[in-house]
Amino acid sequence: MKTSGKSNGVLQNNNGLNLIKVNFEGELVMGNPVNLTEEQKLLKDRLYVLNQKLWKFIKDRTKPMDYEAMQPLYQEMAKTAHELHMSLKDSGNEPKHHKYMLENRGVPVEDIEFYNHIHPVDDLLKFIDDINANDDPEDTTIGKKFTLKIYTRRWGHYDHYSMVRTEHGWDFQEMLISNSGECGKDGNPNLCRALEHDSVCYPKQIGDFFEYLWEQASEGLTAQEVQECFDMLGEWISTCEMNTPRGIFGGLI
Image 1 (cartoon, one colour):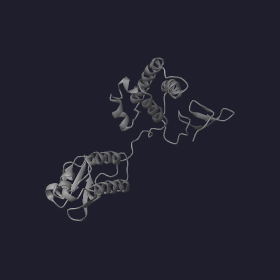
Image 2 (cartoon, rainbow, N blue to C red):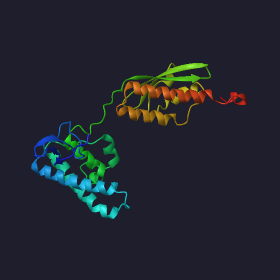
Image 3 (cartoon, rainbow, N blue to C red):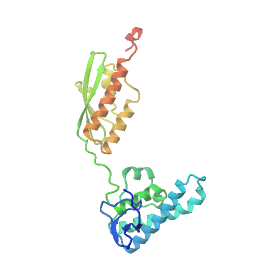
Image 4 (cartoon, helix red, strand yellow):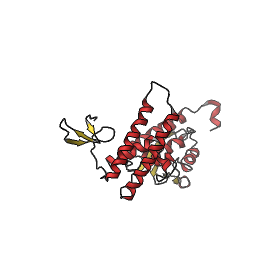
């Protein structure tokens, strides 16, 4: 919900009376904001101005982006954000960033280079408005069992494989003990070993899809959503298996 008539993060009426707090994007603040010192307020205000100037450069499609002209702004923004971050940390309110942001920046948050990009600065301002703004979704499917339904030409029916999501990958559970056990996020080695034992033709990139599913589940997918993905992957494998060439190729597989 966008608002107007804001001053320093506070929505005011025509008489200048404070009505409700808004964040740096002009959205209503519903969370728990950080209680800033006067010095931190000044840093935040300066950072907000720099952030908005850069966004204006980025969003202006009427002329080519002048990266050289933007560099001093980026440097000042990074310096201000770093100073604000360290001040907040020293006062017991260390800013929190999304896991993907920490990974993508490639440097520690204490490094001034961390804030030499507009998105971590966006997140810093959001954190100040709401300390829970950058919380990562809860991973709720560790230890949950999922079923992979696969058609096999060898047996002429669908088989059901069980896979439990673990902290480091999948625990593959199959009737043949030698093919069961802990796997990586891509399902290897036991998933592919079981499929090959049953002479199943499967997509080459199936491991990449299981690894991607594991990562997405860690970002907050429900057990039902993960199972629906298992159903899609099982259907993909089954379609590949059902469409294996016949005729003279019967002796190959």
